[in-house]
Length: 178
Image 1 (spheres, rainbow, N blue to C red):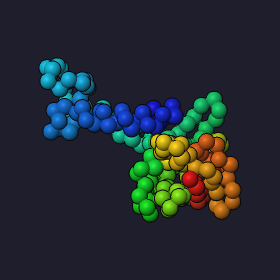
Image 2 (cartoon, helix red, strand yellow):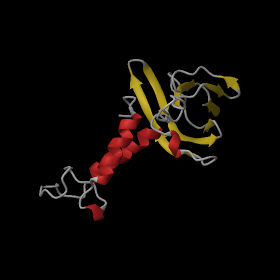
Image 3 (tube, rainbow, N blue to C red):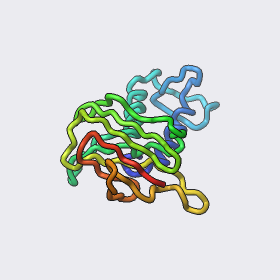
Image 4 (cartoon, helix red, strand yellow):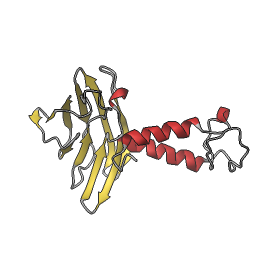
């Protein structure tokens, strides 16, 4: 769902699947998931490591994924990170995440009405660049806060496409202003 541009639905699905693990006390992923916990049914031969690993891979996509399409090769960062995860000055990110381009380390940090993204050197920038998404937020009743108004990349104005900026050189410091 994150790769389809639907981060809200991805988080909703994750919450649903986490709340429907059975037996609940096992904290395990089963092959079959149902809505009615009182209805007897076959759950498969749990726990299923492959289901858990698929879930972990989907969680990693919230932070970064390789996008190899007819449009070219690029690395997408932060497409599934909600603004609500970022407390004032508390960083969220990954360290040494394996990608096709090498190990990825980056952080997102909220500072007032801005989000600072710092991407470390150490990986190859793919031909299509690194597409960095600003953390998403549900729009307020007034429609404010869902997307950044502007961005800077290494201190210079950056082209903001919706809620993303393309980075072509590392290390990089990107600032999204809401």
